[in-house]
Length: 153
Ligand SMILES: [Zn+2]
Ligand SMILES: [Zn+2]
Image (cartoon, rainbow, N blue to C red):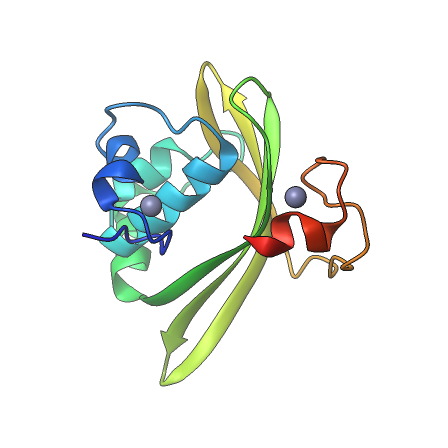
């Protein structure tokens, strides 16, 4: 079975080990993908646990599970991803599309992640971040131009 996060990978080799807490997501990108899958599956516990306590406010497992289940998720596209397992913070910019009242809505966000005691957590996000130019240095810190780097994902 293909993974819910649209990675084209089998679920068992993609988000499943993180969602079932077999192993923690090793990078911000892996956590981001697993959180998308958790929204699709309505896994409120996972969504709350992977949301930084400083910013999750009064969100509850039920609210997150309902938001996930009540939304008709269409797809996930990664714009860029920065952060390796040894880092303390990282970022993932993505576009998520879902259907609402018979129209397709795009959510475009640059999410900020921090690692706390070996676990990556979603911290905060900037909606509709500025467009990354093709010849600009890729924000993933590879030192390459964007068009030769994460734009090819
Ligand atoms: Zn996945
Ligand atoms: Zn890049």
